[in-house]
Each structure stands twice: as structure tokens, then as C-alpha cells.
Length: 260
Image (tube, rainbow, N blue to C red; front, side, top):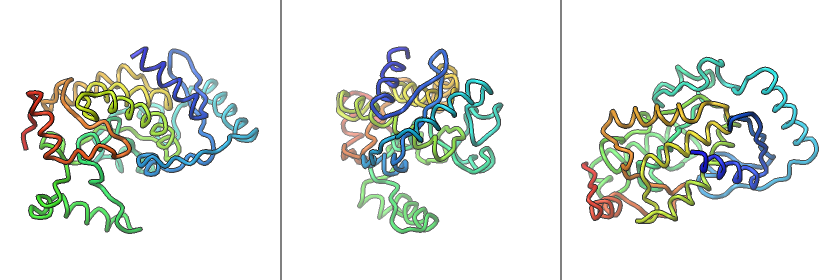
């Protein structure tokens, strides 16, 4: 975890972010033009320069957090670091904004959840249809890899603002990509690595305790029968081409087949 913390700090520096706080917990200020989470997932981050005004806002926010011990802007201090299933985000989060600590994409094929139209409810219907209708699912060979985690609502999340969600992904995605590129088979990592990365990325932005969050994630996933070496996709930019057949074929060769 200490090494990972250093990697995240280094990545934050290269992304134009500032980390503050003791013990590895702190806050980050994002430079303008960072883009939204979907842009980041596709590798289309728009660069920008912080400027004096932006840097001033970062410093003010850092001082505010240090003096008030507040690290959140979507929930109360007591529930800011609470892990809950994504299906409960509207009940748990004031504005309904939540972040999967281990990305939902880790459990499914690239491009499974697409933006087909400008209308989110219609997109959900189309995505659900493609995944759930047997003929479409078989022809496309997309969707979730196995039945232990086959719905984004089952994933574990925390409340964050839209701004902090963007910053977390800007930290998390490049490092996840490095993990995937270094893996063998490529882009298939173990679940524990993404649990630790997710917890440290959240901690860097929210001030939550990374070790406690990683331990809770491990317990929740273990309850579903997912061991630390459970195979997942580490591929934030969708470059792997790991559909269900290819993914299962590769992990089966390692003696770790995933039941459907």
C-alpha cells in the first residue's frame, strides 16, 4: 500500500493535482479542462492549465479542509466514507452521485454500457436489452464475465461529488492501465490489486482511510466467493478486446475458470 501511495502521488503530480494532509490522506485540486469521467474512461482527457486563479482556489480548499477536517462535498462527515452497494446511491447520497471503488468495468467486457442516445434512461434500456436478451447477448458476446458480479448495482461505492469523481478517475485510470499492461495475460489482473488501487485513489481525494476501505472491500467480495486472486479486467480505456469468450479462455488456461 505504501508503494501504491507513492505511485498515486507521483501520478497526481503529473496530472497537475495537489495533495495535502497527513498520513497519505489529503485533498486534490483539479486543473480546468479535466473532462468528465466518461471522457477519461475512453482516454480522451482534455488538458488545461491551472493558472493563478485555479491555484488559488486549490490552496483555499486545502486550507479549508485542514482547518475544518472536512473532506466531502456531497454527504455528512459521518457517512462520507461509508461503503454501500451502488443500487442504494439515491438513498445514501444527497445528489445521487456515487463512485464504484472497484470499477464496474472490471467485471465486464469493454463497451458493454454504451451511450447510444443523449437520453440516459433510453440508454439504460438499450444496454439492458443487449445484455439480457439471450439472442443479442450470444451474438454480441459482451456483458458481464460471470454471475458473481453481473450487475453494476452490486458493486461497492461511496458518495462523491461530480468534481471529485472526475479527479478520482484521473488518478485511478492511468495506474489501472499500467497494472493491466504489466499483467500476464495482459489486461487481466487480480481483484485485490484493484481493491487497493481504488481505495488509495479514493483516499487521496476524500481523506477516507485507505486501509480500512480496502479491508472492507476484501470482506465484501470474499462474501461473494471472490478470492484476492479473482481475475478481473484492468483496462480503463477499453483496449483489451476481452469479450466473455476470450476472457474466460485466458483465465481457464490459468486454472481459474469463471462459471456462468
